[in-house]
Length: 175
Image (cartoon, rainbow, N blue to C red; front, side):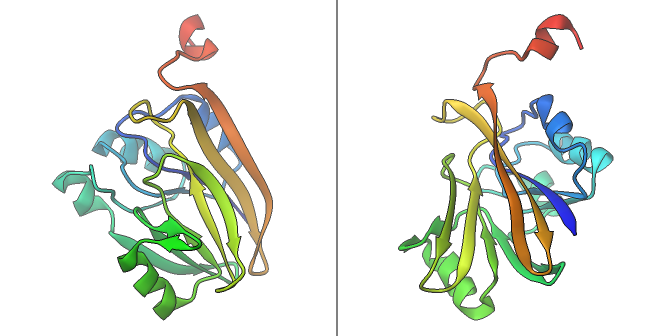
């Protein structure tokens, strides 16, 4: 069993509560639009990181990440990319890879909309953790946390960290 913390679209800002919520995770996955090398380094210091770059990421971030990740973990085939879409409305490039690889779990970011949806036509689970940064049109900072056991996603939690741009109580109190 592996516990995964999933985030996307940090755009260079890492909310301090990410570390609290991902404390017992085995790995952190970032689905793109990281925004800075510093975000990668902070996450890597904390937990093992798997990350893809997004459309806003510059060369420094792109050199440290991949456009797409395809891997097996706990018997589950995973495909992570930044721009992916969702059932019935997949991005053309992502769909081509999905058809070739046929993962059990498809992870993307980009939309800033937290969405978890099972695609019954193709039989894979689609996850988008929403946006964990302060830039974009989203109002609430969101994350996903889940476990992978024997090829299945279990114990999925959607986490809201608060209103985008607001300081957390820890920041206000200086912790």
